[in-house]
Image (cartoon, rainbow, N blue to C red; front, side, top):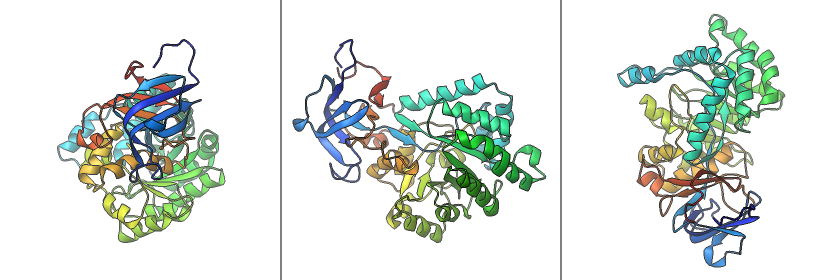
Length: 408
């Protein structure tokens, strides 16, 4: 970029070898790929994108030097407000101990003891880590406090790092209510929700054995909707169950995990896909990698017509990765997705799961959230797993990771 002291009104990202727009009307396939492309940024938005031979003039220029540009990753599922360490739990699991949701209580205890500063510092560290790997939109949940005060402060911290904040008081039953789970549901759907709803956009529930059954999950979601929150669901992670169909029935934006699906679950997600506001199947391959569970069958979902997203589920217990590039590689290798489908799912799919139309694509009007890869095209995200390939990241048109001299 030029070294003018004034901030340029427009920036031309030029000589892009492969541009992923996620707009099929603008280029090849589901990702709308344009080769030998360019893109113009104005006031934090994409003002123009297309073949570089048709690019308009701009005040400043970034030379992509034949590399790939794609939308910033949209990570629609994370749990990064927490304290404590569960690395030994992971080691034990790798030695043969089965995963269950019970380990969440370990993090709850540590999170309750931590100061606000410790929690904020940890969350910011993970946000920076995700951003350097290309994530520009990140959803963050509560769920490791499980008291009114601790859930509220978790959300207050989450709001300092993202606009996509989710109340997950219904993560597991708080230890104080081990003998009174119905009483905890009363707390979550009453006083806790009253305190937390003003800080949240979303409400989520872990509808799973060892967490909340269908009746309790329905109560929590209905109470959140009454207070103006949009719905999300954790479902079908540990086995077949009611989570997927409950999410579809109640119009949730997303049902996340979807590891174990009955045919009727796939049918429900396919039917929901044609709604103006579909229920997205958000797959979390990092969890299945880290717990040695079976992977979701993304191929069956996509072939049936369901809408699919990929997210990290970054958390200290079942999946401590913030890398959506890693999730893309696993989805292609082990879940039956093509590279195009996986990249779409980690960008436009994540946006759909968050009901956002301003991120996840690079058509004019979108936020200028983009990744410059040290690669000629997006296929390298799966082709070279585990290799750091993100050269630079822009969010709202501002460089937030990588060197400002890249391609200058």
